[in-house]
Length: 149
Image: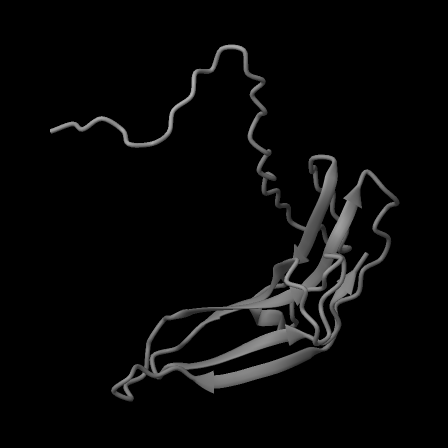
């Protein structure tokens, strides 16, 4: 059965309607043999994450709040990994298999750099991801250097 809406409704005539904010589009590419890449993104501010192959044992390279168009990115260098290892268990103590784990850096109040202790909670930026194995064990390789513009 259908019921009438209890929401406050207003007529649309003689009103200026603002469009909803645009949602940024995700873009991705693969680097060439020399590590170079071209990535087409919309103008504005973007976050960039380079995710090396898991076999490389390198962490993600993350650049927060890059302004487009702007200066070319120039050379970017992956930092040394900071391993974060553990075992994920359920409330009964059993290992949790194949759970996806994600790590986020909290951006500072200006939303242009990773926070170093005083999160103004301007946003978060994913910096690592992995899965637990059949024993619930995991190792996440965190970047030792997070760069903001």
